[in-house]
Length: 302
Image (cartoon, rainbow, N blue to C red; front, side):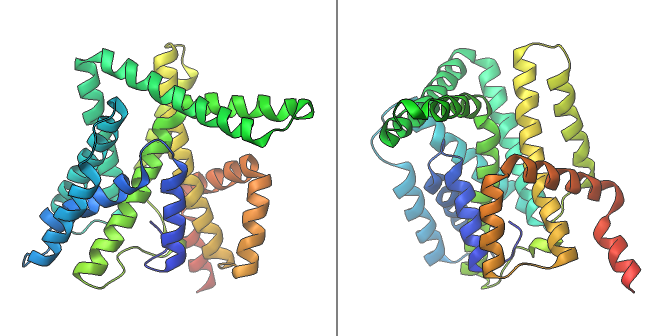
């Protein structure tokens, strides 16, 4: 998404796709990739790549129909991939992040339109995903076997499960952006042998999206009920993660990327101080929206 075609970028994107946990990672990557290979903008069309895309779609979409989650996961991946192709065609000169955010927003809008018409399936799906999040954490806690002395740990994990059940839409949206990044990277490598994703230090998105962040915050604060608060909270969480990545890009641009040892140290510190570091990075990213810190520093050095 932000660090080019190097393997560390692929690993980072893969981790984001895996961590969202609700939609199968292979669906978020291989369904959009299959659609790109079959119906993407490559000219002239290449039959062997189209055949590969059809095979990927068959392997990921066909199979035993188990429950509503099976359909929901594949439906989301199909809608996401279709909207991404539409964004690629409609915005031929746009950066990847603009296309990916547009595809995720359009996919979310499509899902909301469907569930507004038929609300009962949404309640069933939301309950199923919530139970999945709680059961996953309960299974982890049971396997950890912390005993009586781990009561605080168990309580913290159950609170985390409730947060995951409430904010999984934001996690799926972030995973979808990362999945599209992997699909687009693989597609461009197959079609043009180039690296279509930019460097982390150059990562940015439209400054106008700060109003989406503000709208999410307003929905959380305003006394409009739990539905509006939850919707706003998910918007806020998604945008905060994007701004945290933008803040990290500012740090890398101004200080330089750490080496392997430095990256390991930063990762370990981030695990311990995740809320503090995420908040600090998000604030820095929001500040960059208003002040364009990287341009100011470069101008001062010239």
